Amino acid sequence: MFRNQYDNDAITFSPQGRLFQVEYALETIKLGSAAAGLVSKTHAVLVALKRNTEELGSYQKKIIRVDKHLGLALAGLSPDARVLSNFMRQQAMSSRMVYNRPIPVARVINAIADKAQTNTQQYGKRPYGVGLLVIGHDETGPHLWEFQPSGSVLEYVGAAIGARSQSARTYLEREFEDFPSASREELILHGLRALRDSLAQDKELTIENTSIALVGEGQEFKIIENEDAKEWLEKLGDVGSTRTRRAEAETTGTAATAVEAAAEQGSGGDAQPEPQAQPPPQTPGDDHMDIE
Image (cartoon, rainbow, N blue to C red; front, side, top):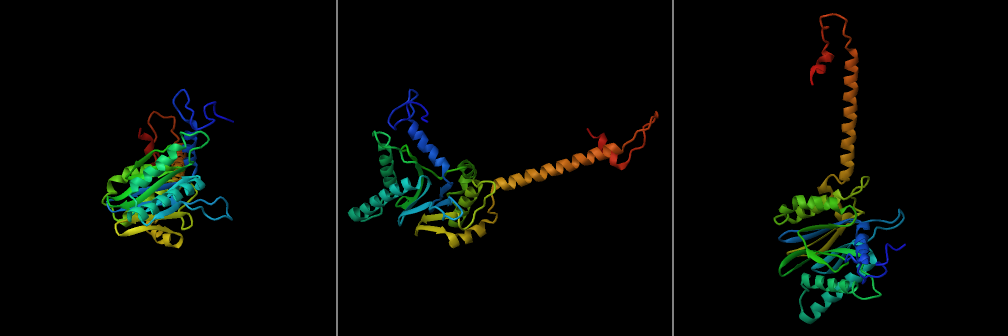
């Protein structure tokens, strides 16, 4: 069922000035598993949560290497991400062949932004249903960019996309002042903590579902996953969901409150005042009944 008569294509504006198919594409990003990126003065890091569609299937690829100095993490439709990453590779190879230098990060980002924006302006095309976090290192230092299907791109100090990414963004917003001076190891651990906050309640980070990517000064784009990620998960320590720990704490607190309430009722039942003018002597269990 169509939402209304203005969402049949990506080029028709509603009376409120909205392009519904572009908004639907943005919603697609929220269905993908979470990915986060952050940048310091020397390095840029991506972390992503891989997802397998079923127990017998392999985990989907979340981080793609574009060039020695450039790579991306995706959330949304992976086939669309593959098309965009191939286009970025073509741009990177063209820069090396024509100019004999790595392509600047901002240039390749603007190239895919123009490509995506064209799909919102020509009839018969649809927006790309994927969001990207792109990191790279060039003459001006490390960079982190976010790409959206509308063709909008913006550079960030820290960003997160995908399902439950708001929890990761909350962590990044709380800690971003430490990012510029952070070492490579600290930056990766910050990223893993942000990713951990986006986990569902019964999930945890493992070597199978965690991907890490790094690029920076003297460091080519490198993907760390599977057994190579074990070292970083051990440094992280607690790999369980923050939601799980919060739920356990609430359960423990509720149980303790119930025990205290039962104790109060029990001690209150022990007090048997006698029908005399003088109040009966209090037992030690009744002391708390005088506190308002």
